[in-house]
Image (cartoon, rainbow, N blue to C red; front, side, top):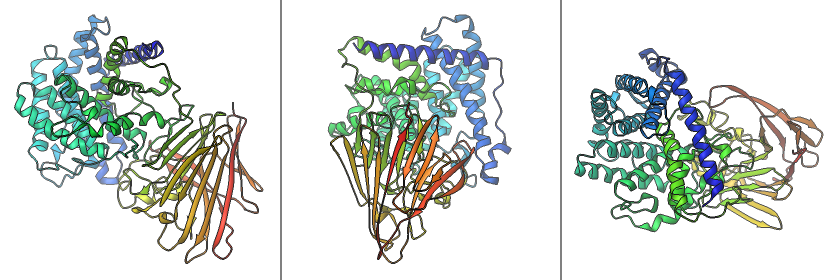
Length: 599
């Protein structure tokens, strides 16, 4: 048995259990905030969704904390029996209050001009249904019968009826190749398992539809297992998929195994891809815990240990990310009950399996090089510490940014050349004005500006070819970026990145032959204030210095932007720019990046 993994699971479980216990004790004397019509209408009025969601998700925190505490006490995970009645009384009041909400869906996902808008099934309506259904099932005989009936009536009316009585697809998320499908279908499927146990035929019919939808969800992953929506949305969708898949596996005694592609007429042919999907999250971490923030991601991501335990139960040789990056109770402000419940229960289930098997020897969490050819991603980690990640892809991926050819340079926990990740989700962020937002525009990424214009949006604007090879302690990435720009703007644009896997030095070379016009501007993005010193630019952080060495005779200028991050906090962003010297419409721009003072 892998004693090191067992110890880490035990420590995680103890820490998480303590977080839940302390949160329950604190919230026991607090009132859950109320949702109002005024807050709900703010999004329609001025596009602000933060104020409503702050209250909505605080209410879901109350539900999760007291639900987990009640489950833990029932499962004998904490000897605080003297508090059990007060916990259950508080939980019942919370559940009944949530059942009185006018709408479980969030305002951006609702059209109040439509009949039946109150029973819109979005991500959070589905999540709420799942949480309540599981609590009704696990706490049967503990919660008042009135509360159980309230759950059944509301889940049936708000989620089961609108979804299962609709044609296929219910909305554009059903049969979609993205996280909405994984979350909504996974959550509804789990709710069915918990509430339809007494009607086996209806349960089977409903689960057939759910599993058919989830097949489309898995098709959204690249053949190498990558989720181009980013680590956060990977975890979001896959956690709900995996929770449902595990419950289905348990319900049928392993007869139906979505982890290996067995459902109805489905064969196990997708098994290899699903194993690659399971291994994706580890590849998104740099050595010091920072994460890839491509698309609407975050550079300070984490992983859900309970979800990873489920994957480890089904995929031999599964490798956990470093447990210092494990999410806790408050790591995600949405308080997804499903994630938290797996964090509470699954470490112990995995430890039981580990005791009965011969686990592999501990392996290094980090590979020096991860190449995802289908997604066109490369993640390289040097022995000295600095890391580099780059991507090709196209400009219509889910949650995409216009960022074909973009790269990140990281070291010592600092993103010297960064990816801003998700911006503030406001009205228009997912609409026509999306690519006017800095973090979504190619102007907010380290890619060239051609003829004064950024990359356009659309699947047709992408990386024409992508190749990565490792040799002599280096990784060489070659990308053809001409098709990522306005048609006719360039005849050819080749970007080559050479990263030293020992020292962490990065060399970037852009070779261009222009089309109708005659200008190309290099554009490197950072959130550290650059200091220009002739043909080099310095970025400093915590005693470390990142040196950018410009092409000969290049003259750098710095442009400053203001950016509203995912939490709505304004930040400064700097673009280091210089003009590429062109002769008869052709030119080469080569520059070098290295880190000094690495601790």
